[in-house]
Image (cartoon, rainbow, N blue to C red; front, side, top):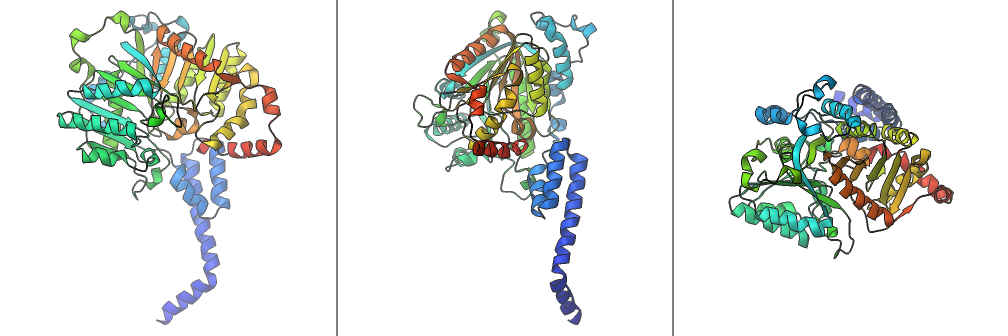
Length: 496
């Protein structure tokens, strides 16, 4: 008893010393982890500063939000044959001409980029695809629901946001009816994304017997360290015959003609062999989330040969680029860098959040200094005010060397497309910001096709006509307090 009382008295006297020792020990441990596992020097220095000068709290923030790598075992478990089918043999310049005719229409200056592309992401470029642009939910949702209603075997759907509004209930009903018909339905929703809606679509789906699971649940002791890592992919695959990808969530706000707070966006309907690559991404995500391996019909097996379109109607050469804070880290960044190096005439970017890191910004400036036209469209106002402030802080830097940046005057423009010259297009879920490049799981399609490029370029031109070019005079007239606010938030841009 005397020993216990003495210990209590000693702690009471020396509690400040104990806290200091605990803080120093925790700070040293955390700083060592930062030094060993963080790649970016500036980010590492910022984290170490936060850890040292914010006792305990700084370390807590790092362990919750600063660790952005996940080692996934999904690919080790998946059928090896499917993985082998998706992977491409290594291409070298001496072997390039001996490959099939997939590349014969690709300009010569892109051939080296294709070779580099295989090293960035060793997945096949597949010919014979059709990519159809669907503008806003008014065009996309009826097509998606019709595909669900036509399903005979399997449906997989992944979405960041799935609102349980009048539009969301249509999707819930269609998926539930498909399940009743004997269709295997698997729905993967991000646990943070579904939190945007008070009434949870996941609960409604489960009541109808649909398998609906949450990706990295936010409220879980086992996954709290991954709370800042989100599945931002939007995927719908049906029977191996049709797929939908893009940046469009499931929300009535995307019904621009009737929404109170409309969101402009573009979704893509895909047919062709690249569907297998899209469904494979879902299979991996599902296994990672549930430890359950699902099977999905391949394009070759499930597609009716009598319904196959002539190859002249399906000219798009395409492949999936998946990215995430796991083994696919940096795939999208490197794909963009690789493509920008080939630009000879024009680069057109439309994104809701344009906060590129210094590497991508330097690449864009290098392209502009070569005399290539670089045009960027961002929203007049996005859905996140402090992101608008960060973008505004960067305008002067972005505009260097002749890059033109426009603010679109329509309701929130959420479209995510990039076109280079007349042949290359990049479509999907990722934004030009650190969150997409570092923290989110994303899916994009890298496409080679002049017609698709022209369609998207025409779409870009229409949007530009309803946009205002930002000039240096616009930047100069921003008030000093506003500039201070903008640049203060810019310091946190690697983490938003």
